[in-house]
Length: 139
Image 1: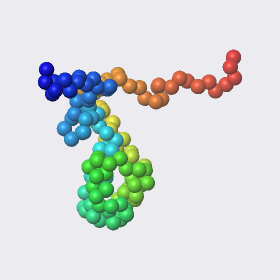
Image 2: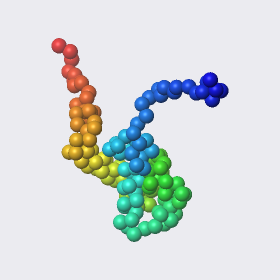
Image 3: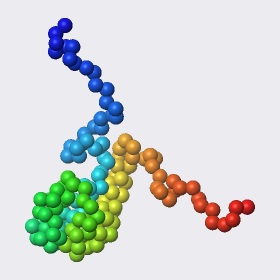
Image 4: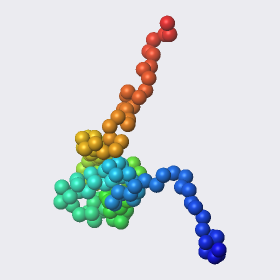
């Protein structure tokens, strides 16, 4: 037996390796990341206003490189950074998050219509997942 053969070992992963989706860095197909959705909203709103990344960077006081990475979904921006970016666009943080939430809902609905894995029945909303609270004295 050669030395090369004796130094080889079987590696057993602790967690299953997710199937990589193009451009998603290992995220399961069809599962959008929040940072991608928020970045998409910021970029779409900036372009709709006809503004450059540099103009938005200066108005928000966020570095051009970091803002670019946020728009591309490469960085998970803090709420302070998102609020500054939103203000630079004349929006509130709530506006940006609401637009990203709407996009998430539309993507989820599209996924459930196409029968994507895990699309139907795998979750419940927070409202239905919690037991009803008693408001009066126990009786």
